[in-house]
Image (cartoon, rainbow, N blue to C red):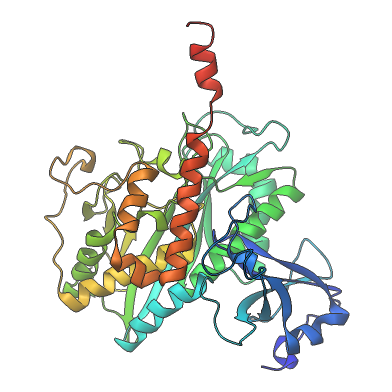
Length: 431
């Protein structure tokens, strides 16, 4: 590519160049416009540690990058046309791709994990379409608590109260090229949901990475702290990342058979159902992520599937031919979208190739389905299933799988060493 592919908008003085790390957090640098042509031609150097740090930026020795090899460099190159940020005059943002010093893909870059499954689908004649629903909290940065109170899900009065912050998140991010369909207050004070219009799978994952970063920036500019933490308050609703999947061929949705779920769609469900449990760390990689997974919380605890049923793990939506899709509901809003989409799509494509039939459809309360296959409700079980899964290792690649498992193991170990305030309050003065 040449620098002319990435011409800056007129008046740009600074370019934000970044990509998603191990947790799908966008990281990068701010670059003077005067240096942009050099970046386009030669790349921008970063330590490979960018892909081997946790959400707190703690780094540890991993098989691929470690103190033994000195945490060497990689380069970022622009991948998209820079777009202006409406709330920062003169600042543009550009999404990047990673390249090793050998000019090859970086084995611990999460994006190629999804890229491989999108290509696999294309080789089968399918284009993967994914829509993303992201829940998150808007909090007072001083107290860490919501500024409002009470549950007002879909409440238009609450929506109006939040419009001074949620309006810019919705409209200005849309101006940046991320098509926002709608927003609404969710099932807790301070909690909202934003829906990103469905599009090609890899692009949808990139947009999730960018959206979370931009939403946090915009929230800060309007006096709020946005958090995509899966369960910031034990007694309140958790924040999910619901993914809507469909496969298209020759301009038609192959999940649809006259508005009903087709055989292809049903087999996709069967494949996803088979791998939901062992791929659990792709949707929830932390101790906190599993606090969402409780009965009667609208977060699934098993692999059930059903028609327009929000108690199941895999919700099928029927209707017009273009609307038929499968919604997977177990992931937390803080997960890495590349891992989540890659494992879901890989499982679904397996289902199509192998003709996997799902279980009997669930028509009632899935939380009471006694014979339903469970998914992990704690991180320890999720790690054990991931460690025992040759299938997941193959999907992620050896180095990426090892790094993801190591991070979750470190999270589990960290929490096992803590004495919580609840324990102190409950036990210190009573024993």
